Length: 225
Image 1 (cartoon, rainbow, N blue to C red):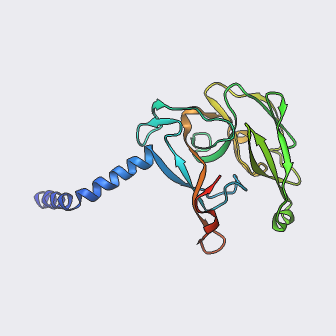
Image 2: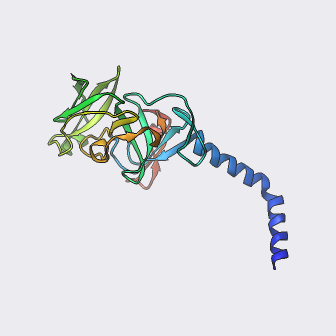
Image 3: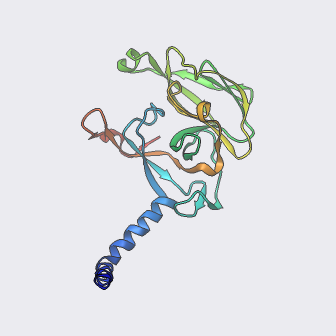
């Protein structure tokens, strides 16, 4: 039986080694170079919605040993306003959030308005669709690090809408979801260690509508975020 098994395995390898090699290289590529990440929750609305598959640039910050968090070469550090993907030990899962504070920054929030290093962040109201207004939420444009992005706020702020001034420790980052009243981010899990950050995203690759039979949302394919 053993001889037959070894013979069959040798034949199987000979007939499929090209496929096995291709799959192995693809897994290494997805682990260390680039991947896409499914977004199952609305914590990053309105920027990212449930059903989006976002592009993950895994070489944005580091070259890592495949299938590990060990960095071989550091290319750059995350900057304010960037959307990062990280393997959160505190949350015990992969998360997608926006960088608000980098090491050394002092950050506070009062009634969902951010203060960075003693300066108030600029906000501007955005016109919203009727469906959003009816749900007691509103869209606001937040300006951070010479760039702007939209965030979603409850008309009645949640318990997450305030926190006192905190200083971001060395090799850590303060991150928030764009859906500010409905995101388990640094206000819940604490600062994000640098070594947990695996990549950066700036584009939706594709999107499926979970509420409409998983039909594709063509308008969100290859959407910049």
